[in-house]
Image (tube, rainbow, N blue to C red; front, side, top):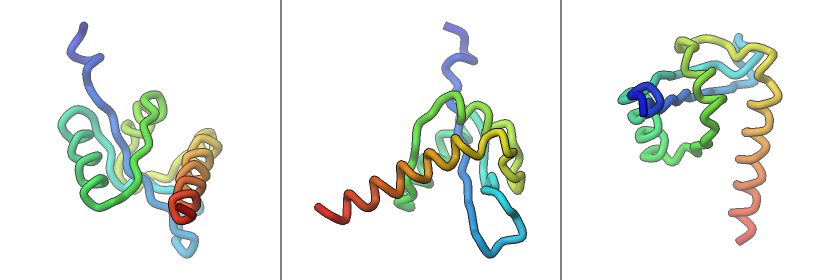
Length: 93
């Protein structure tokens, strides 16, 4: 297996309604060691982590401060809805 197939990709996103940005923004992205650190910091900070290798590969190519392009809106909304439902279900138990 190629070393490149073993590389992990990760991206951290933020969305704020009162921001100058109209879409979620990449706040961190990377691969390999950087990706591992992004995931580690998220988990330590109790920030939800969602694994989608294809989407992570795409998002990891964006630099911090980059708005998500419209073509990715639906994928990001699906993840937000997943976490919203997870959060609501966790509160019920």
